Image (cartoon, rainbow over all chains, first blue to last red; front, side, top):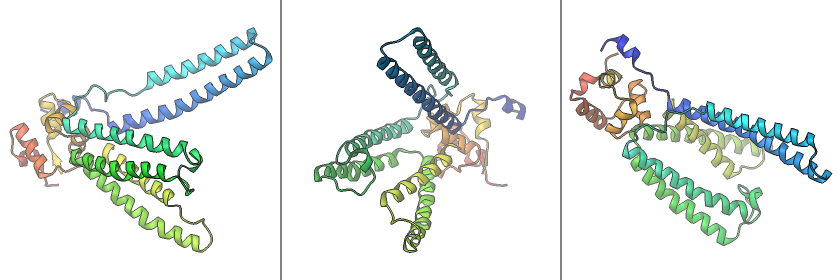
Length: 217
Length: 64
């Protein structure tokens, strides 16, 4: 096979580029759709209070719905495709299933924390929670979490394992450098006391970003 | 490390996903090996060599 033959061989799109474009379209389009939905709800509420629709209201609502529809259509048309139909190795499929199981575990944790003992405002705070809520969340987080993580780790391929390991190393360094700096800044009176969950979120975010870049780009 | 994976794959008209399925790895892993961003482990290098019925050193070249 000559070099020109190889050049003709279709270059396959990077999965990272596709995922990133999808995320941007979902976020940007989602914000616009929520904004339009809010406008429609607000306008309808004023219209009802006023005693019902007149022709101008119907025209305005139709225009808003049309803009929303156009945005949704634009999102659908520009949605990057190309990952759905490709064959997937059994190991990769199995790892993906475990990731979905992790999502399934984390949803009840979020719902429990968000709907009990102070609601969403106390989701990451240090306010007291009832022992029942604590038991359920600790059970899910400290038992189901490690089991699923171990199972996932056993199934990912070596490239993903490398990405995960590199992400962990970068995150550990972020923790080592940021935490003492925050501690010292607190002692100097420049920052509030450390929030363990804020540190956890920061380290997890760094880990996730490093893993994503290493795996998909 | 330089390698001939993309050429060998193109000769067989396989997509990255098809090759990945045969090697039981992700498409991203094949892409990373082809572009030199990931050097495969010895077991994976053996699997690749067996799949193409070649020696490892005929696919991978550690000389710059």
